Length: 399
Image 1: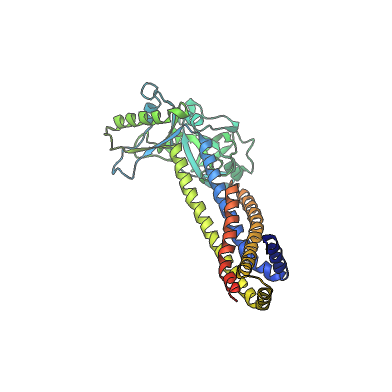
Image 2: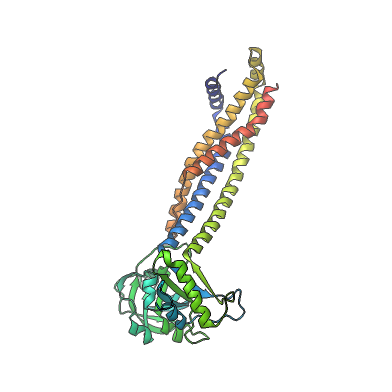
């Protein structure tokens, strides 16, 4: 008996009991669908996070206080940021933007909301590529003069006023103090890191330091954003920053009371975390595929018992053990492959649905189904059918 004849007989056998065949394939369909959907979510999450990090800029560095390895670290200050931005000592640095961060309660028109507050300088706009939908960014005079000026994220503006336009000149109380709206940040959409500018407000750094979030040390800041002159100068900029801060904080090499994190480090960490996340999701979904394989084995064993007379008749007319073995292996493999194909379609639909639900929640996620994940799911489902079909097929050939 040739392969084509065996294939046609297997199809005829499977279609003779459509309900049983459908129920048997259900485990494979669910398993493959889950694998495809989970891998798509994992890949989509990785692409979204990597895209967001790269969107910030490949030449960006983050300087922060090292509170883990040093007992009493010297806090970062505005003067540190000014030294880092000095082209004489740090020629690879184009700008440095010190910030302090916290939470603040806002009140306007009877509406109250709590949101993230960031105290910034003029350099923040350059380093973070800040865009406004209306109004203007803070001037040097406003920053040095401790101005009561505020720039609202679009979500914050909508929470307070029900709109995000025509708000220049409006008054917002920030932690009980009146501030004048001078700008509205351009809407950016959801953030995978949960700190979207849409949900933040900006105020002059000096205003935040003295009136909203005073620190223990004068001119203390929480973080310094540093922009290198280009992506190729990031390492040189990092080395120059380290030398400047060691000199200012009077510490030796190996005693750094600060950390410098580059975008490359963020990308590596993101790829590692999302890679583990994707493998975990795929592994969990793969368990259901194995359960589907066990279901195939059980049904094939029942089929062997029911078709004892058929097997005996075929042997009587000259069928060999190999023919019987091949016949049942083809049937189990067909169950898995057909179920796998349907599962791929189901997984694709599931991933699209999850993507839309995420978008409705203001979370940017575009599940990505790759050729590799489709091939992996198809081959794995075929292998499951073949593996779990061996015992029933062997049992049938021994009758």
